[in-house]
Length: 571
Image 1 (tube, rainbow, N blue to C red):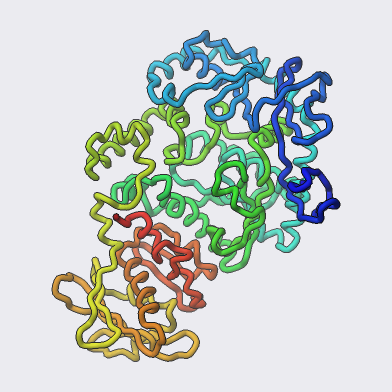
Image 2: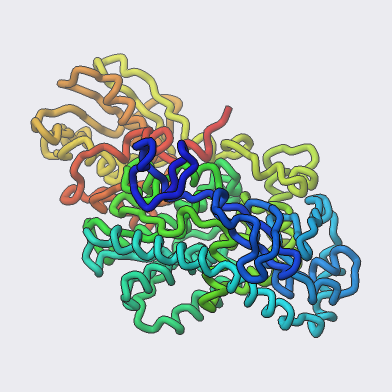
């Protein structure tokens, strides 16, 4: 534990000096021992900071975080820098992003280098030089690195194991889940949780987005074979094709990663619902504070509705405060198997075409996934032309497509616009434009308001009455309507309420869903009761499960009441 006010390490949750709450986040720094040629992880105020635990010689500050550079990446680095292919094999090589540290000396590789590199030539050189890859010196270096950082490793294990056991106390073993992505963080989390609970039979859920690295799929299979007692479930969206969705609503961008809901969170929600229905579960995630600004705002244990993507789960993060170098220390010390992509130089493993990937990651994919990379680039260029970009290739190659926002230039953008007119013959009635015929699916979208009672409506008009869930008083009337200028329309009248505009606003959200639904599955994830499901091409709300909490119709949880509004909104 750490008191930020006093800059003091303590074992107590409250600082014995100032009385303030302490944090589990111990500030660490990476030092370098020139004699042992390895990095040393130090608590920033430790008494022995600056002393190597092996040779007892003086060390000097290097950086805030590091990852090891494996021999496969060392070969690539030598080729990229036009050096002999074995140039870095007998050196201690580490990295942080695109900055390398070779025997403790910094070497920065500009992003432009990766952008303009001739990847076809580099690929040929790698294939012709594979025999120069040598692990002898690397293994010796890692052995010393682990030996020098035993104290840090012991602390990481003790603290994480204790956290896992405490977090799991309130949950039955069968209601504990490990979120498995095939990346290094989820790998360590799975190992930590399994060992802390001494339970090799825990449920693992692997979200296969269909955009995974080939090595991720291989590693997931290997993990499954190496852990035969684990219940290993695969969540996969079998109904959507990534490129088809990109064609319709545009490729994912940094601020518009619809792919997460559609290809990961949504399918995982379905697996959870199939296993647990509406039971609350504890899911251990490999979330780390240092990964991004957004993740730094998370709590280590999170069950707040605004923060948790899947509502029926409490999320716990055992490695929340770990650095990259901690992850590697743990895996290398305990010889934990991991995804081969890290040996090639990837520092993060997720969707290979993610808009959050930097130039270096894209460069690696052009080398190791050339066909997929070429197909993706060609698609992006055609998309840029379709939305009217004057220089499509520059737009794509410079990465500007990643900053795209909204549905400008897309025909589908019109589907999220709520178009209505006020009825001239009835008070508090609006006539909404529909993009397809009125049907029972639309009527079913009004279940969150209360009981749908078609028997109370005028049958000749196909009217349905919605009764308030608490009072059983009629609050809405819905019926198909013919309207000049609209091919399809519905009339919705509000009644017996104090705020007609507020009720019509939520009505508008449901109309938008009916018009714009692309089966992103976000609504399924947000429903704690598992009442919402996408069946085929239809949006269905189960009246027997819905508790009328209205979370699915609240902009606080869904942008504009529907995630498609966020992705297709135009300026």
